[in-house]
Length: 74
Image 1 (cartoon, rainbow, N blue to C red):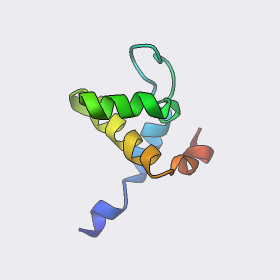
Image 2 (cartoon, rainbow, N blue to C red):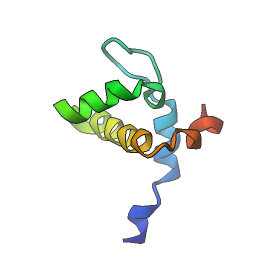
Image 3 (cartoon, rainbow, N blue to C red):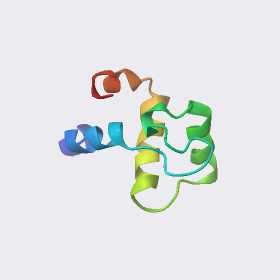
Image 4 (cartoon, helix red, strand yellow):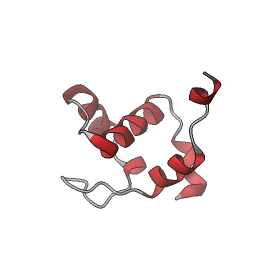
């Protein structure tokens, strides 16, 4: 259970470097997506696969005000 409390640093680094592949914000880093856009995905449903899991992680980060954790990774 302790593993669930601490995200994999490699996954966070990858998240910090992954860009949105489609839509209005194509090319923008996932972590830099506007919060209302990420909330919209939460309400409508995240895409399947890896991108969906990454967007869900971004949602949790933004909902908890943790964006500052990515300042050094950008």
